[in-house]
Image (cartoon, rainbow, N blue to C red; front, side, top):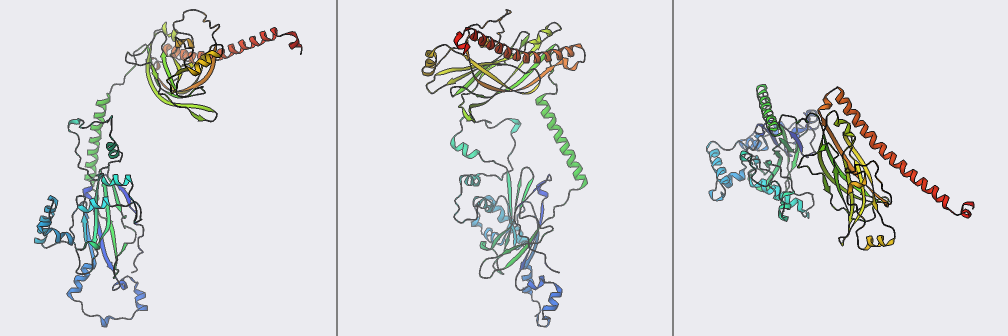
Length: 552
């Protein structure tokens, strides 16, 4: 029968298993393919046509040849972290003076027991487990490239020094933390030693002693057949992959007399019985149920409901960016004003200041990106009469300030935003302005000394909440349009009225829709009013022009 082709893909394969790794079993078959038995792998018709029957010249088989055939072929079933000693280790650990560690003495006792019971069951195939010296040296001497002059990088050195294979880390007793979660002042050595992912990992090497006849036990002839790695998540890495439906792997030894070896690796782990699978499913179900109960005890099973007759507003906001301002190094000061019948918890902070941000050129604009988050909660307590006063909604006032190298600050603009009345995500850009003085002296003072006209009350940007009159006059107040600030809001509303289908819910819905239309109409009315004022000024200017300019 013709021999199948060789497997040339020696890359690693990754598997995932939920079964305990102690049930993992491999069957490794190793066989020498030399010039004396290459004829065994040719097809029978080819032997009949091309070769002369030399059976009459074959000498009788001797006992030494039987022994040699045993050394040419071997098959072993190996379990996870099962130790199979090599001839070198047998010769080494029989000498008590060579044992230096407790593990060495343990290996010596096991070897003596094996020798007393008839010797090893393996000859060429052996293993190195996670605790052996070879595993440590192999991890430290791994290369990233095939170059002989490779210089290991900093990351390679750190990965070589990190012990990533230990899975015997015990949990914290009683759930008490033994170390600090956050290190506020990390040292340089702490940063270097903790930036590498430390995944518990165990390693095992399946080896072969490919030495010539009668010379087993020399380290120069050791070859790695397979590398196995298992982490704490049940991920199994096999290099090279199993040869289930493929040809065997080949190894060509170096030296004066090159020899060819082939080997196969097969997964012979016993499948789980149905009863074991059902028992495992029950254990997992019980484990997940207990974990769910534990999480419920931390979070609580009762959903926090709003007080009847109230509307709760939750806002998760972000100061996204500011653009179009005269100076650099900007920061934004903002606060939320709550109208009548609105309140917030005593611990709630309704104001904030962003970090100072340097602007960045984006097209024709200079933009400062803050990405400053903030959150607050407010409640509106209403009854049938107070529900009519819900036309006023919380307002966010903002002030943009610049700060230069000499600690000179300048007010760059004031603005305001009516918080969105609809739940969901909203992105709103607020235009700003600042008060100005007539003449160049004020601009020179602003440029060289810093400082400018400021509002004593930021609520003057809109109609102040303390204003009780019918008309608010800003006659003689001079201002200048500056840049704009972009906000992002994620709003959530909660009220028992949303669960009702009666008149209270309809009234609440109509009031909220009215607030939205009212805020939009206010913006439109402001634009129309400004346009009408500008038109009247143009008409007055045309009336006051000299007649000769008008006629021309």
